[in-house]
Length: 455
Ligand code: PMP
Image (cartoon, rainbow, N blue to C red; front, top):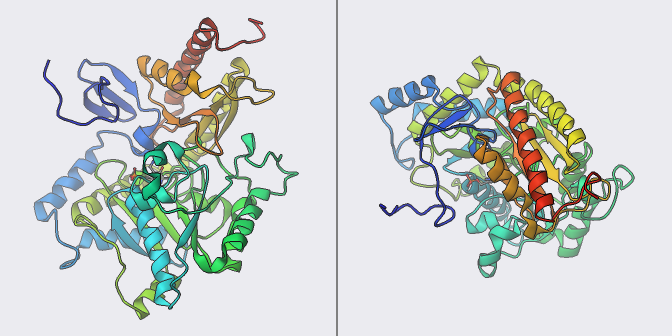
């Protein structure tokens, strides 16, 4: 057996080799077909093997693939920045290109701190995040993330940033019930700001719909307007981490549009290039850019590959493809269909406690008891079990890791490419149906689960 030299996510695991992809499908070298029910990590928004993207890559590569951003700019990067600014809220007009979501949130953090420093305010250096959150893997981005599993080994190296409770109504971290709670989780932000001192805090960061650490948790409708008001009251910038939710995934170009709330900074990644090339961005408001322009004139971030024309050309072609095929609209329509089909499954399987999400970013949370909402013990590894049953049957879904503070449960995200049809969603539901049936049997056999039928 030839030993692989590639470091994989879990050493020793056997990963099938993918030979090609087409639309929502991936095929391994043995010819097995997988439905990409999560678009990879919610990234392959336009599906696999799109000819127009390959052509755009070739067209750009023939001219120039790489230039160094300290020396030159390119038409592709200029056009992409202009296009993103057109899509973004009115006063978010400046775009900084990076290569990953982690770099986009980390750049947002640096820009926020720099904004205050340029004005002579050197103490506003902390960023408040939420316990149930993930903003990236680099040390700065991880410092702003509540994701305990990813944080645990690196805690001594991380900044001790404060975190607020998330608007996670199904298992409220404050043990409240919506709407009677009056969205107390938003008020908690103010309490934290007051206890630390607003003079210490540069920004608050949040995912519009919580992804990797919670499984497509959307907040109550009032939540973000309240957050915006609190940030304004204390001169704190609001960063929307749209790395997962941005670029049409939730049925709007930016998920914050669902609540008509305008952030000061937006982080983008994943769906921007739909996975055809690494590319991410930080969009910055005029208010911030005016201060930096009047001051040092340099945004203190940047990478060798930032704003490279090859990636920019790919992103332009992805946006073009999305517009031509009205994929944002499709996300809304098929997303609603997906939710109704998942609700059908909920009638059948009491394991499904909650169904949630926006557009084609949907999640289900699995519980031991749907009435008490009691989660499974984490050692039961219910998410992992469901994931591998689905995998065997040729359906890829995304795990939202349980065991993080503020999120005790097991959930999966179902987020196929935005090109998905209703017929294909029916196939996803069929496999999920069989998988939940197998999971129920497996848990009962292992003595880990009791249903009315078995008690
Ligand atoms: N922010 C959010 C909301 C994410 O979901 C992720 C990735 N899961 C990141 C940031 C980090 O992005 P990347 O993995 O591209 O660094």
